[in-house]
Each structure stands twice: as structure tokens, then as C-alpha cells.
Image (cartoon, rainbow, N blue to C red; front, side):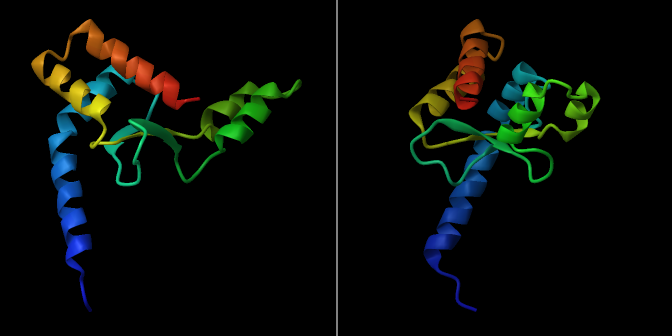
Length: 125
């Protein structure tokens, strides 16, 4: 098999980004607590700082909204069928890079918490 250097270079950069942003992901996990299941570095984001992705199993966000709007819906089924959300970060975006610098300097800073919540809430849109 032939392996192109471009894909090998991309894999190497992705692994480096993953290691570099591991600390930021842990800080974001502490701040967001149970709102998302997992924070990770993304390879597919180009212009956005982050995005919310639903897991493979469970309802889509649209189906979740439909089921919540049902008049006679059973709220017990919403808990286990609700999709687990994953927050994917763009390591090449300037907002994420600045957030990492701030989090490395002081992870308990209120501006870090505010920025993480702002990113999370805007990515839900």
C-alpha cells in the first residue's frame, strides 16, 4: 500500500494538537460538567471555533426537540434517548488558541469560564 506524506503529516499534526489541547479539554470538561459527554480536537472544522456533534446512537437534535414538544410525551424516555453531545474544538482557530493560553495561565479565571460557556451556547445554535 502507498501512504501519502500529506495524510501522514496530517495525522502527525492531529496527534500533536490532541496532546497540546488535552489540558484545555479537561478544563472545559470541568466547566461544562454534564452538559457534554466529551470534548475533543476536531480535524474537520475550518472556520468555526467549535461545534456540537451528537453521538451515533440516540435521537438527533431535531427528534429531541419534536419529542419534547409532544403534548402527552413521557418525560422518562427523554433521559435515555437524548443524544450525548460531543464538543469538537478547532485547534487552528484563534479563539481556541487564546482560550488555551488563558486556561494555561489560570484555569480558575472567570473569563475562561465565561468564554467556555459562550462557546458552548453559541455552538448549540
